[in-house]
Length: 338
Image 1 (tube, rainbow, N blue to C red):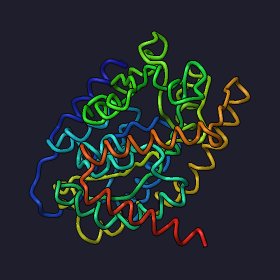
Image 2: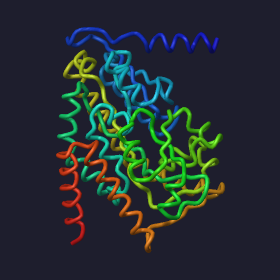
Image 3: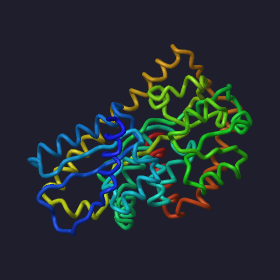
């Protein structure tokens, strides 16, 4: 029975999203995500879908495929492009597959705080929405994934300690892998579904992940050391193909966007608090937090981050996007230093 159910699920996902650009009377949006079933991200998507159905009187429904059952983010993007899926709640890995501008948010230590990150993101949203539109996607909402920390099998106090570890990186983004390598690190590209096996077998010895994800997935049991402060916010976004979007009436599009904004607001409040709670929960179960925020080591970490940023700027992120982000970051820091 389980095999039959699984086969039916796969068949449903393989049915192309065909149709003209004319608004349909009813439409079911097929959305996939890496977010685990029952996680805060998944719950907010479910609430959003319930609101779509209720406020459109059933004209728009949302089917969610959570937990990576449809593949990693780059795979989801390809499935959306060919019509097997309509939408995805993606991390920066998937967004970067659509447009390299989003790789900006993979630069370590580019942002000093959640407030700084949200300021820059809000300022850049019109430009990023336009770039998504040019690639055939509509932005529904941003989804904050938490603040990424380095979790490792053995203590990491110096940059050299980290360079000695085999570090997980997302499979499918070879350009970012090359930046890691050029800075002296040992990246190992894997699918997200292979992370636990990779940790258990020693294929990888460390990984960047938000605390909440480390707790939910139980990865921290294999990586009992966490580096603090965190290295970057995990940017997420829910996007839908323009082909699917055009099958929904303008009236119902407005409802969808309103519900999406509400989901974004809930996540922005909920996830930072969940991260803090997750760290405390893991510390009670053996996690050791190593603070490198002060002293000579802090300067070494900052210098390495700047070198990494330089590599990303020259080889991945479009120059105009990087400069725009720098402009808004400087603007925020100037306004908040008074």
